[in-house]
Image (tube, rainbow over all chains, first blue to last red):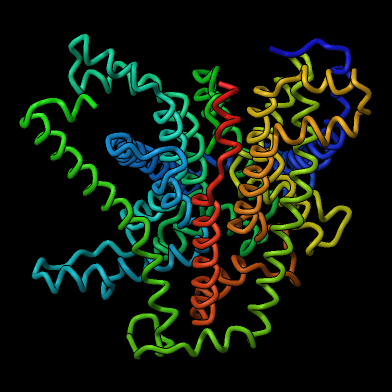
Length: 279
Length: 277
C-alpha cells in the first residue's frame, strides 16, 4: 500500500508540526495527569489516588457508569439496526435526507437539548401531561437511572447510527440478491450478509458511544437530579468542589486505563476498521 | 424491477414492509426532534417560566441582540470554532500526507497517537490539558483554542486519510516531471484530489468545537465563556429565554445551510468519485 517513490521520504516531514503538537499537547498532558495522580495531596509519592477507585463510593459510581454505558450501547445498537434496514428498504442513499436528519440535531446545543428532556420527563412535564390527557396514568421517570439512560441514548444515538449506516450502505445489492436467489430468507440475509459486513461500522459506533456515555457528567447532573453519580460527576466534583486535584487525577487515570484497555480489546477485532470512518 | 414484476401478494408484503419502515423512521425522528421542538416553542413563550405558556411573543428575539453577555459568548464560540477548525485542518492535512508516507511501524504509532484524543474520555483530556496549561500560560481564550485544536486534528486526519489512500500519486509525479515545483504541484494536483475530505474534516472540526462543553469547561479559566459553558452556568438559576431564541436561530441557520449543501446540484465530484471506483 505505502508508496516507495523517492519523493515519499521527504513527505514525512509534512507531519512535523503535528508530531510537535502531539508531543506538546497529548503526550506531556498525559504525563502531567499521571504525575498528579501519583502525588499525595500533601506532596510525596503515593498510589492511593489511583487505587481509590476501589473505595465503596467511587466503585459504586464506577459500576453505575458501566451499567449506563453498557445499557446505552446495547440500546443504541438495537435502535440502529432496524433504522438502517428501514432506510435501505426505502432506498435512502448516503447523501440523502435521512443523513441530514440524523446530523442536524447536533446543531442545537446539547445541554439545552438535555434540559428539554428534563422538561419532557419531569413529573409535571410534557410526557405526563400527554399521558394524563390520554387517560393512561402517569410515569415517574424524573431523577432516576431511566431518565439518565434516555438522555445518553438520545445524545449518542447518531454516533452509532451513522457508522453502521455507512457500512450497510456500501453493501452491494447484488450480494443480497444472490443470497435471496440461493434461498435465504430476510432473517438469514441479515445474519449471514448484512450483519457481518456491518461489523466495522458497528465497532466504530461502539467506540463512539461507550466511552462518552460512561464518562459524561452533564447528562447525569441534569437528568439524575444530582443524586445519581456517574464516575464523571465524582471526578468533576473533586476538581470544582472538593479541590482535591490529586484524587481527581487518580480517578481519571484509573478511568483512562479502563477505557484504553476495553477499547484496545474492541479495536483488536477491527483490523480493517479504518475503512469505515466515523461519518 | 423485480419487485414490480412479482405478483400482488409480494407487492402487498413489500408495501407493508415499506409502511413499517416509514413508521419506525418516523418514531426515531420524533425521538430526535422532540426536545428541539420544545426548545423552539420555548423561544416564543412570553412567560419566563419553563413550565407555563404565557402566550406568543417575539420579545426574546428582539432582546437577544442587546444582551451583551450572550453576544460575547456567541462571538467567542464562533471565533473559537472557526480558528480551531482552520488551524486543525492545516496541521491535520499536512500530517495526514506525512503519516501516509511513513513506513508501517511509524504509521501505526502515529495513528495510535491520533486515536488517543478520540478514544479518551473528554473529561480526562480536559483535565490533563488544564494540569499542563497552568504551568506556563494563563487559562483563557488561548488555552481553550489550543485544547480545541488538539481534539480537532484527529477528526481532520481521519477524514482526509481515506482520500489520500485513493489518491493517484502518479499524477503528482507527472506534474513534477513536467516542471511543476512542489508547492505548485501540491496546490494544483494534490489538494483538488483531497478537497472533499478536507471540507468534511473542517466541517466536522467546526461542529465538534461548537458542541464541546467538557474540555472547554476545564481549560477556560474565569474570564472566557462559550455558549455551552454559559448555559451550564445558568442551569441552576434558570436559562435566559434569549438563549432559546439564539439556539433556534443557530439551528434554523444550520438547517438552511445543510439543506443548501445537500441539495445543491453538484455534478462534478460525484462523477469523479465513480471513476475512481
